[in-house]
Each structure stands twice: as C-alpha cells, then as structure tokens.
Length: 545
Image (tube, rainbow, N blue to C red; front, side, top):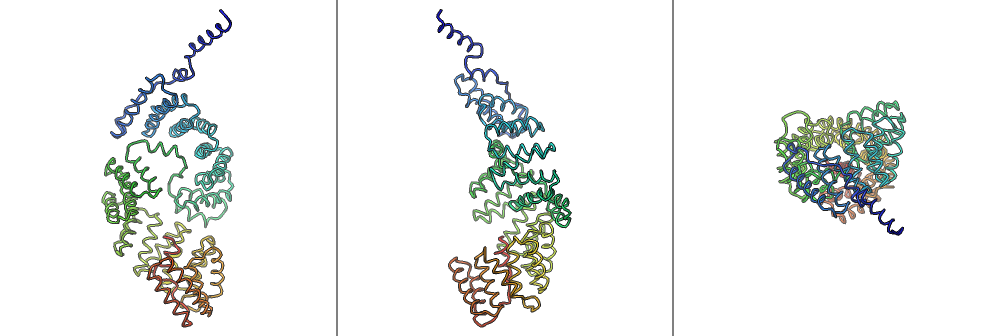
C-alpha cells in the first residue's frame, strides 16, 4: 500500500468516525424537539405550530437539506413557541438553529430574549455578547446588555454599552434613558437630568422616565422641578429599536400580532391596510378582552385618517360600550377623548365637553384629555371653568405649551390682562426654548386694551429675536401689530400686505384672510390692533394641535 493510499484510507476512517462531514456532525449534536401542550393557545396558533413542526420534520428527513435551511426551520418553530410563551419548548429549537448556523445573529439574539424573559441574567448576557461578536453595531444588543448590567447594580459596566448605542444611533430614547439611569445610580444627578430631559424632549410619551428624572432633581436639591415629574409618571416600557424582537412579536396569528402589524401600518401612514389588520385582530379577540377595546380604538383612528368619520365614530362608540362603568381604563379614556375631538370638529360642543370629562374620569393623568376639556370650555364661553383644567394639565406637564397658551387665552377672555402678561412672562422665563410662549407674550404686550400692560418696545425685542428662526405669516402679523402699537402705521400696513399675499399664495382659509384685511384697514386708518387673537386661531397655529 502506497503512502498516498494509506493517507486517503486514514481520511476516510476519520470521516467515518466523526460522521463523514461537518454537516453530519452538526446534525448528530442536535437535541430532540417536540411540541408542548398547545391547548391554552388560540386555534390559529395551534395550526401554525403543527405546520411548522411538520415542515421541520420534513427537513430532517432530507439528508441533503442545507444546514441554513434546516436551521431556519428550527428557528421559526422556536420563534412561534417563544412568542406563545412556551419557553422550555422554544429553547432547544434555538440551540439547534445556532448549532447548524453559528454565524446567524438571530438565534443568539432570541436566546438572549428568552433567557431574559425567564430571569436567567447570566445566560442572557452571554447570548447578547455573542450577538455583538457577530454584529458589533447591533444597537438593540448593546442596550439590552446595558440594561442587564444596570439590573445587577453594575452602572460602570452598563455605561459604555449605552454610550456606544447612542454613537451608532443618535437620538435613541432607550440609550438616553439608560445613560440617565446609569448616572442616577452613580449619583451624578446633573448628568442624569440632562440625559432624561433630552429623552423626554424627543419622546414626551416616555412617561416612565419622569420618576428617575424627579429623583435626579431631588438629588440636585431642585424639589420644585421634581414635583411636576412625579405627577406625570406612568408605568410604560421604553421602546428598544429591535427589528428582530418585532419579528418575534408578529409570529402569532393572534389578535395581538394583528394589532402590532396594524401599528406598523399606521406608522407607515398606510391607513387602509392598518384598518384591515385591526379588523382581523378584532375577529380573533373576545369582546370582553382589553385587547378588543384597544384594537377597536386603533381601528377608529385608522378610519378617521382615511376620512371615514362615521366609521371612526362607530368604532370609538363601541369601545365606550364595551368599557367598564368606572375605574381607571386607558382604552375608555382614549375612546372618549377621540369622540370629543370628533365632536369638536362637527360643532357639537356640549357633547364634546361630556366626552372629555369622561376621558379625564377614566384616566385623571391624561394631559391631552384635560387640555381638550379646557379648550372646549374656553371656546364655549366658559373661560373661568377652563382655568382649573389648564392649571391641572400644566401641573402634570409644565412643558405642555398648549396648556400654557390656553391658560393665557382664557385670562385674556376674562379681561385679566395683567395676569395673562405675568403668566406668559413667567412661562417664557422658565421655558426659553418654547418660542410659542414668547410669541404669545408679544401679542399681549401690543394688543390688550390696558395701558398698564402694553409695552411695545419690549414686544419688539421679542419679535425681532423670534424672527431669527421664524418667518411665518403668523409672526409677520405680530410684527405688524407691534409696529402699529409703536405708531409706525405705514410699516405696519406694508408688512400686513406682505403677510396677506403670502397667505393667499398658501391658500389659507377665507376667514383668516378677512381677519387680516380688517387689521390692515386699522393700520391704514392709523389705528392699532386691540385683538390679540380670535377665539382659537393663535392656539391652533402656535400649539400645533
């Protein structure tokens, strides 16, 4: 036997000993997988699981099936079982998928999520670090490792992961929140406040951040800043931008998965598709379930965006019908709020007020509902009653510009001009980054019929500063008002004509042009404007409702 033949024979024997090929070796190391008792799951989910299990077995029977395809079959079954919270059955699926395709980032990622769901912190940490070995710029994995370290009281280890995530994906709320919590744990209260304020500025609905922000302000000794944040706190998850987690959430043929798909369609402004998905979710959900009301409210929102106000109203009314008669209920609060908004648009003021009141009853911390109620009261001639609602909304969220403006407008309507000026001056001082407040103050300073309040020179300073970043027709009108107050009627009229030309080109409502024309006539007669705004036009323009 020649040396070449002996070498070839040795290779064959070695291959036989280890299973002849790396692919066969990987198959030999697979662990058994079986379906759990699926009786607690929706019938559609049971059908899905059996189909994926059958597909997996067919792949196993095919000895020539590529490892990547076999791994995908294991992984998809694992995802379905994971989404259905059958964690023990899902784990071996993921492990087999990872063994077959060790370079695929999905399977360690899902193992990390699974181990995290089961509270197995060390395993989850190892899984996500494996993700980062395969994909170093994975923002979701960075944030999840950082959170795991924070939960273990290791802020020093957590901080670099949040910082890296923010470099890769600036303006990521979860990364800012992580840095804020890290700084708070390290008692760096100033840094914590900075990160958490930035996160809330980018996403005002990240309401769970109000509590750590209040703690940061308390640590700084600023108790007056802490109190409003304590009122705004709500227990809401901070969204982690994680496409793989979203794919997992969409696995089940269930009401929840259709809700998630519908929300994606809403975000993409595909209103028709969103409505279809929410309807499918409703079909798969019991009427007495909280999810059913959530789906119906989102259906109403999608229908409203398509222009189907009647359909939207019916969907919101169905949520109200299915809601409990009392107690805190977010879906009921949102449905009543949406009905209030609809009825404002159709001129049904009394009915709108009742719906806004119901919304506040179901969810007292719902700032938008309080503002809706306050606006409706003010517009209907009940300015005095509106003040307490604006005040409560601003206490819950001092940065709610609509509330600050509405309160001032109500004071003007009540002819309490000095109070309106002082309110806006204080708000402007506290929130210099909110130009709408300075704009409203300028209007008050040049238009209210009280010589003790008007101050044209100060108003001009405000308007000139605002003009550096805002060339809107609304601010142009304020400049004309200010010039008229200072006696420069020719310049006021010239600017007003320019504003009107721009407004006509932009095809603004006829009523707005008529109002502008009335002001122009005043300036041409050498008379100042003594109406800071109509009943609602300034709040709508400046509050961006």
